[in-house]
Length: 250
Image (cartoon, rainbow, N blue to C red; front, side):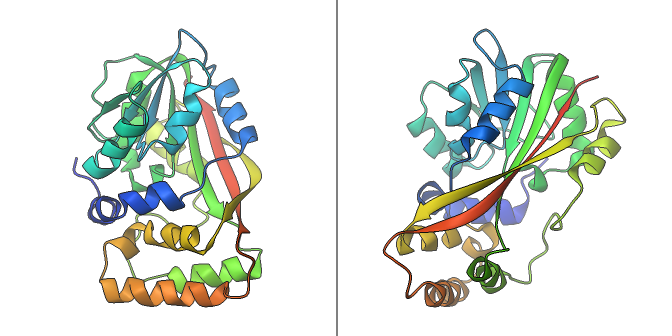
């Protein structure tokens, strides 16, 4: 299975911006994932579509062994440089290069929307040990805040996205997993990333379809985003909500 072309081009070009501009995750979300997946010393977790390792690093605090799978070489190189203690593998969610029943938990942060669920979910089921868990995590910009909603409009582009906003991921996983995974439960947490203007621009540069597109288009978008925050303080909060979907192998 090849990587979605938008993801491959965009994340290859935007790996540096991804490291600088993407937010971390709220402590409550990390604690929930660790608790629900039973991650601890002697356990093994797989971070699927690990990117530059932003979520991978947070999983290490559980004491579990963490394996990171990332198909985009430029992203994986950032992860390896930052987290040499993590086993970083090249591969895709549709063909996970691990043995059957070899992990206790699978996490996918900011990545599952790029997967082919019909192939990825059976692979997740295959590598999970009995009773193992699955957690899907996304940071979503909080568009209840007017300037953030305007930023989303500015950064939209006519691109063939592999998913739609508001996707019911419980239904997606249920359909692909044939009831092998318990119905995913959604948990949502507020979160803020404290940014300056350059960090905000890096957040925009890290958007795959913008990074993969014409440079003139990206330059115009960056200028429009700067216009939204021209009178803000030097540092200001970029608000998110963090969605965590969790289920367990039956």
